[in-house]
Image (cartoon, rainbow, N blue to C red):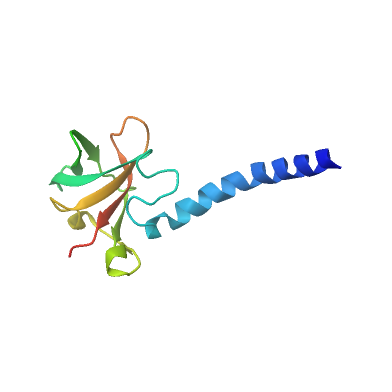
Amino acid sequence: MNRRRLFARCALALLAAPLIARAQKATEQFIPIGQSPGLSGKATVIGTVEAIDAAARTMTVSAGATSYRCALTDRTRIWIDRSAQRLSATTGRLADLQKGRRVEVKFTDATRKTAEWVKVEAAP
């Protein structure tokens, strides 16, 4: 009886894992900067916008002593984090990425060259 329960729990966990990942992806825009479970600070970079080149669609983010220059493609999602104002996040645009603003960037892969999404802190 114990083996059946263990097997059922393992099977349920294996089936639910992809659903949990998709659920986080669907709700990611509503999670404040630095609070994404399993992502923030591990698979993302949190820092300050140092430079933005709208024509080239690139952004440089400074995170401590390291700078990251990343491409912003048509597929890059930009969200404005308004949690400090106790408001929900909204969809942003390239123009919302301004020098000096705090951001969290998730890259498309380990090379950290292209942004999958960017959360930018709302202007005060």
